[in-house]
Image 1 (tube, rainbow, N blue to C red):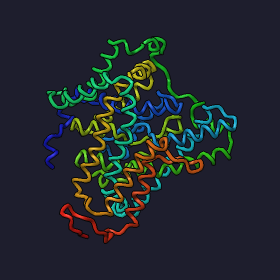
Image 2: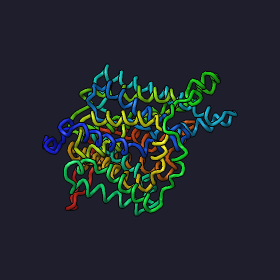
Image 3: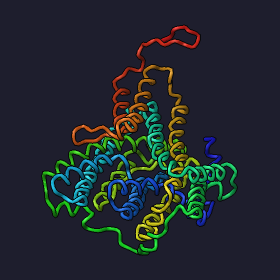
Image 4: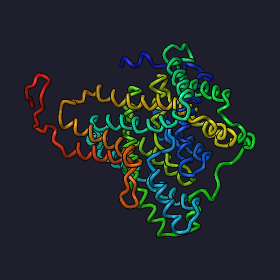
Length: 439
């Protein structure tokens, strides 16, 4: 591939540069990964610990070949909120209610194994027949566009800091030389953060009150607390409420694998195989949930970093995972990151989320998807409109009883269903620019 000429081999960069690249991937995932526990009430340090452990397990199961980082999944936010509300209504504390939610998410992780088994039994081609580029391309585009709202919200807290981060990333990437050129995201974070501190925008008081070392896992924040409480009816209700969300996250996983494959220029769905990457994601999600961390998912932010730096060596991702594990035992570092201005995260995220959508557009172009076909237009249009419309028009999700489906979930389900039932040729006539009708 022509793309290969621009790729950096991390092994040739040396360990010091690889470490810096690993730190960059750590910062790329940090904002979104930490945001999930902040929104749900789960623990930040435990989240970091199992993001790192989950990533390493994913790499082991996928034969160490896929440069993917696993961070907190936003897809289960509705599930956490629903179960927490249900538990509190029955007199539980919010902490115990969240433990029940984690039980549901752990069971949802088992759904990945079912899909992986189907792919292993029937072959990836038969399963992927339901996920052609006309479906996966718009889903990848929608992932970036849906995430963009949070980036804008963060930028609005201080547009000056956000613009500084954006300009730093762009200048470093385009005009930078050597190591500067391949760590634009990290530089964007550092420059914006330092300027924010100099402007007095950061209050470091909480940092001095935080310990240097601490063990992140506490029994009352794990699903073992659920079994000690022993409400079987609530357990079943939780599982039924949360497990169906796995269908949406599986679709997102497939979309992410297409995005990573397109970015790197290798077909990871064929080798090491989609069944392996799904299994790795499922194992990471199930184990993280058992110990009170959010569900894991392959991270688009880090795909954006891959696209920006052209360093695709999975070893760099594993360095980031190991750093996340180490830092999980340092509450002071977690506090330092939590003090980072939202605008700094927003500015960097704005670029990374745009990169994700750009990868989706590139998928459509490279696969030569015929968007003159009314059938394909219907599929792509409904995926994009539903994903974005539900996100910004229905307060993130749509409730169907106790189950909350995100816009991405609904868009993926509708797109797959329409692609499966609609004939390749609708026989509809459309007008060309010359005013003539054609089939």
